[in-house]
Length: 354
Ligand SMILES: *[C@@H]1O[C@H](CO)[C@@H](O)[C@H](O)[C@H]1NC(C)=O
Ligand SMILES: *[C@@H]1O[C@H](CO)[C@@H](O)[C@H](O)[C@H]1NC(C)=O
Ligand SMILES: *[C@@H]1O[C@H](CO)[C@@H](O)[C@H](O)[C@H]1NC(C)=O
Ligand SMILES: *[C@@H]1O[C@H](CO)[C@@H](O)[C@H](O)[C@H]1NC(C)=O
Picture (cartoon, rainbow, N blue to C red):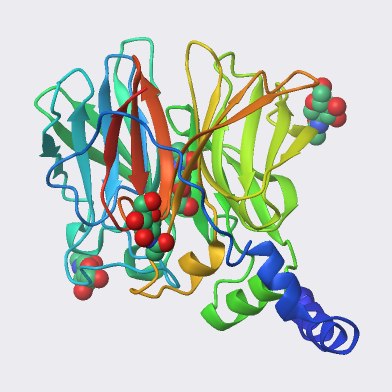
């Protein structure tokens, strides 16, 4: 309620003292041109046509992909079909796609709308998959167990008042995770004003069955979140301020901000190379095209690699950039044995040799 009042006052204040439209365009990095950076040997993964929003590669090369996201304000092609989780094997020369069967009578398949995903592997090598879901535009986390016969057994649905606008998730235990809320308000109209005015009320939550708490806030659209290979640091993409924030994670699960890296693009998902610790970040060079879709102006794609992020001088390399003629709206990129897999909000998935 207090924030609603503040939103109204801030809105009036901004109208008087500065032009929210120009600040909005700066935050969206609107109209930036993309100079192409190509990779040799790229192919589409056949059969992926309606999004590959998030993906996670297991150490054995199996990849979980969430597909068919319908997110208010973003474009999506097939409005009737529910979303799904796909499985791809990076060891195959020309990977084929398997749709994972979802088992369990506790889950409503027809409203499945998967967004960010994350896996957790326990000491017995059981793989758990956590999926941010938006059934009827709400936010839940669905917990699944991956079964050898290539199915997902639904274990439970997690809802919490501190998880109203979930975007991405990173698992730190079988039922323990950090998650990003990309907005404070749930109401679509208030969300728009929150984003338009740049109020930076988006926040990060730690969840476990015993304790749920806000561990970081003040984000201008918190998006992708991931963990360093040693589990000591958390990386969060703050999309509309074009930043990757680096946090130290403490034993009591609180986070302390160590630094931020500012990039000239809207940062979406972060995947972390389990061996080198490098960050692979998929980005939207021009946010105007993602929040205000126009079929005549395709969304460009961009992938960055960040090496030595914890040092004084991290190395940032633009690995792939394309104006949307080939691949529209990259959201995630992940590397496995010299092959890069790039996913998108609502378009295809591209697979390149590095
Ligand atoms: C499952 O989701 C659909 C689509 O949102 C909805 O119409 C239906 O009532 C839901 N079924 C149950 C059992 O909740
Ligand atoms: C990838 O980006 C999407 C879109 O914002 C987000 O919901 C998803 O959780 C992200 N995944 C990762 C691995 O960061
Ligand atoms: C959590 O741990 C950190 C580092 O040890 C400490 O600074 C902080 O006060 C602790 N917070 C709480 C709420 O216990
Ligand atoms: C995108 O790039 C391609 C190849 O560089 C070029 O042929 C095409 O005209 C460009 N399209 C747009 C919309 O800029």
